[in-house]
Amino acid sequence: MTAAIIDGKAIAKDIRAELKEEIEALKAAGTTPGLAVVIVGDDQASHTYVNSKEKSSKEIGIHSEVHRYPADFSEEALLQKVDELNNDDRIHGILVQLPLPKHISEDKVIDAIAPEKDVDGFHPVNVGKMAIGKDSFYSCTPYGIIKMLEKENISLEGKHVVVIGRSNIVGKPAALLSLMNNATVTITHSQTKDLPSITRQADVIIAAVGIANYVTADHIKPGAVVIDVGINRNEDGKLCGDVDFESAKEKAGAITPVPGGVGPMTITMLLYNTVKSAKAFAAK
Ligand SMILES: NC(=O)C1=CN([C@@H]2O[C@H](COP(=O)(O)OP(=O)(O)OC[C@H]3O[C@@H](n4cnc5c(N)ncnc54)[C@H](OP(=O)(O)O)[C@@H]3O)[C@@H](O)[C@H]2O)C=CC1
Ligand SMILES: Nc1nc(=O)c2c([nH]1)NC[C@@H]1CN(c3ccc(C(=O)N[C@@H](CCC(=O)O)C(=O)O)cc3)C=[N+]21
Image 1 (cartoon, rainbow, N blue to C red):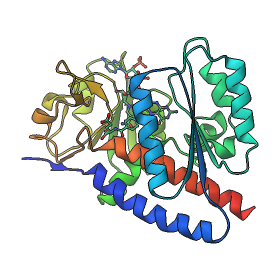
Image 2 (image 1 turned 60 degrees about the vertical axis):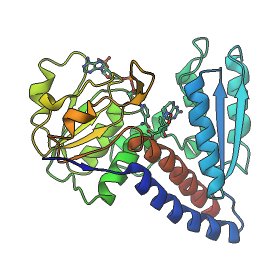
Image 3 (image 1 turned 135 degrees about the horizontal axis):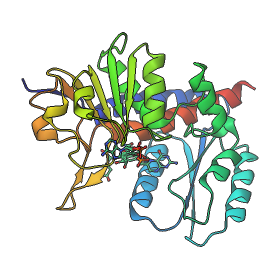
């Protein structure tokens, strides 16, 4: 069996077209959605993502500003910038690109973002609301996965979802959103014993490990859906996911590629959350 390839890039494009229309309506009613991205330091990959976020925002009519600071920017100055953006009426979404330089506390910075502008969904208030099943800003990568499955008519109801990874930005929220969608959820991580025996029970595997080619055909039940969150570089410097795509696609029922799978959905959900925030502000 050869898996259906889930085209995240195409799904993302469809959602952005829908968003563009919503933005035009919002603008006509006097509100231009605004997104501020803050990046500290010179990590090349982070700059690439941020540029991509800026480009995608502008394409659909979101007011986008990027605040770039050197690696020695102080925590105090960053907190002050966040405060300024919290009080800026043109800005409906604030994203501080992670990771931050070691001398800055990520927790402190995330806590400083006004929850109603936390379009990344990282603030404890938004994470807490998600955990108790309330509407909030959901973390963009897992939310993108849920939207992608919805668009592909893959229901999670009653399915066994096995998440590999338990980070606050991917693994944990992916598990919570799957649960919210009535899946039976197992979370696995670096201390899990005999992990392949668990993933082989999965109807849906969500791999967020950060190790190239970690998930092989041996981890997969025939016909299972495999969602590859990983963004890694292989020995040749080529972008690749956490899943050994070539072997996995012969066993899975459906699979996401890297690039062109989860990544474009992440950026799209950031735009989606920004529009959602602008609508909420406009309604006030
Ligand atoms: N496509 C996208 O939009 C995005 C992609 N990413 C990518 O997704 C991947 C994961 O990111 P992130 O969650 O931030 O990474 P983290 O490093 O924060 O988390 C990795 C998780 O994988 C677990 N893990 C590590 N080694 C193993 C192992 N040998 N077996 C089982 N579990 C293991 C860790 O377990 P433990 O907790 O025990 O240490 C941890 O929970 C990365 O490649 C990242 O680049 C991230 C964000 C967005
Ligand atoms: N505050 C914060 N929020 C984030 O959402 C956040 C972050 N920090 N730090 C880093 C991770 C990583 N991340 C990605 C987003 C898009 C792609 C993406 O679009 N990838 C393309 C390929 C891009 C390329 O060619 O390099 C794809 O998979 O097709 C990847 C990774 C968001 N993150």
